[in-house]
Image (tube, rainbow, N blue to C red; front, side, top):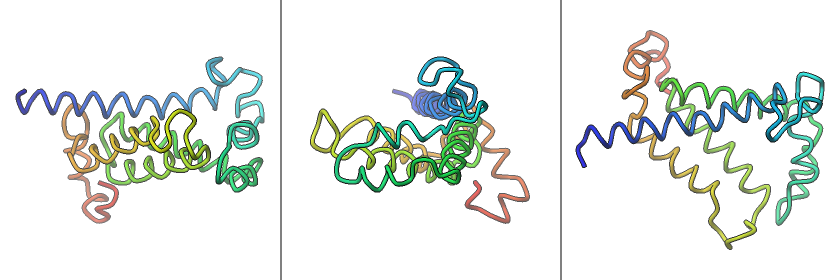
Length: 163
């Protein structure tokens, strides 16, 4: 495989993983009828995390996550996190902060259902985390993305974590 092919695959991984985060934001915000029906969207006042935290958590840490259900700050952090991580990955900007934030989001979701149902340790959440870590170390935002431009901006030069 050529180096250019590897860069293309990393770009496709970045964009598709970004779309997973963005789709979660869009579906929870607008109730597009996939995981969230229109009458349960955040726009009509329904908590985007309440159902999952109340009914979808299980395992070792379930009680901790259930206690977070209904907290407005949790809803905002989740929705804004999904939007921010998804946008950054899709555009290829802010890859450091986006991948670290994405790892934290996915790790919390993983822990809310630990241990996984179909394997004693590994499920798709850990695969997503590994993909995010690969994107973190690979500068994947620079290919088919705005990463090169973004890292040259004044704000990123001043605050490198935004790169």
